Image 1 (cartoon, rainbow, N blue to C red):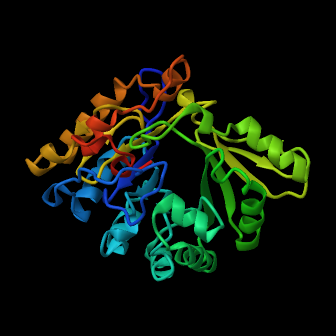
Image 2 (cartoon, one colour):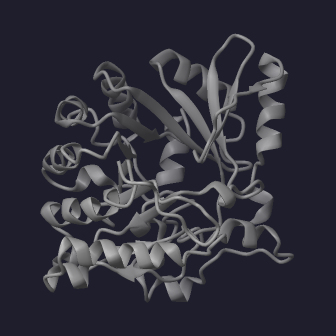
Length: 342
């Protein structure tokens, strides 16, 4: 296995998030709250063969964890073909997918059979009416059916991601823990982040890790921190009865110093950070006939110069507002969370 490549802070290149589409069938309040969006031209989207080819360039430099994202990745037709191709890369030891679950019920078994190891489903509420208000969709029952199907499909791990927003769903923390326990899934609570299309973000809406732990302590007793986080985004905890859960505290307790992940958009732009304003176009050299060695050299050069620490830099701002102004988002689809695969 290749020795992971280090950036200017010594952070290794180990994890790659692959977006396969910028389209989504939900309009979540914290990600896509506006009415109109700029979209990537269809002819710029990478084919599955191109995605596997680029992924091979990353694995040659030490990447061994790959996550398929979107937009909503299950909107991409024949996704199992891509999973099969990625699963055949010998360096990939962990192949995962993040989905909103709307289309999962009919695809869970096929995804597992194609070689997908782990799956994460976004679930921000257990209430149908609240789901409709959050997403502008009435697909809540479909999401729950998708989670049930994933629970039965035999994945190595099933996680449920919840973006916690004050006054919206912060009263459901205990209910979500109990639901996760019932379906055999670990819940991860995510602090509301000011990235991409989060145009309605404000500091007061953020429910911090400390607040989440306090709420759960009242119901269960004090959670115990678990060791071995490594470069994972979530800090993990155990309740007194042994139930585990995670918290991704990117807003109040960023983990930039340990971050080993980067993102490839569906049209081949490589981003070092969720807070990045620009990236490196890998589609252009790939389609121009660059060899694997040339692509590996480009990836090595860019990563070795990486010096971002976006979340830490945002933490120190006195007047912290949404990262990207709405006018800029309407001109550049690459600034959107649904394009860069959160």
